[in-house]
Length: 267
Image (cartoon, rainbow, N blue to C red):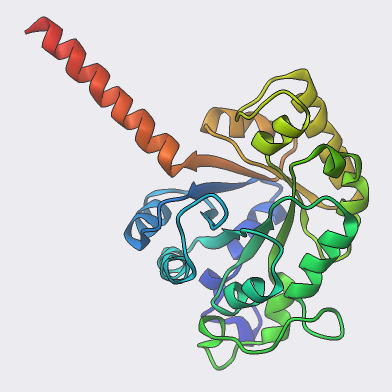
């Protein structure tokens, strides 16, 4: 690691890129509950490479996101952010605060993907304003090298985006495409859902994977279970969500109720 990067490994996508360099998928946890203790607990108790904080459909605001990113970094995992939109000001704020990567929702064209990249890069490559906060605490930080290492995914969540996925994947500076099965299912007329086996979604996943491989990029997918995530990793997906906070808590509560009812019926 270059001298300018020492002491910063936890703040950047080192675990993700290390997995990719080793020919392995990067495993991701997904959080909607805005609690830094929970974020630290998940990062500390798992062997995952990344933890994503959901600012689109989760309850995180910017303060909660910064606190959770700090906790995730403390435990050596890469903090990712699912953005609420393709907003350059918010993108700059989160990168300045130490986000290791961004997942941008509802990208439907190469031009929108280019806007994402531009918001993450300094001139002349982009239009990001200079001014690191947490990301620049270490005085040896090379802000420009750091900006190049941020992991960037454009979400494919609409029929139009699926049609344009090869052009989106080809955008320079983008790491890859991230399939959002819920919104994509709605757009394709089959409704929302996760861990999907419908022919339309299976074909879409294959099409996105092929577009990424043709462009030399990575493909990612959201999942509701580790079983489905492992299946997608076996199918060539490079970043997979293996744990979701509300899904896991809901399953745990249902199991507790089942055990209670089973024991009570024996008493």
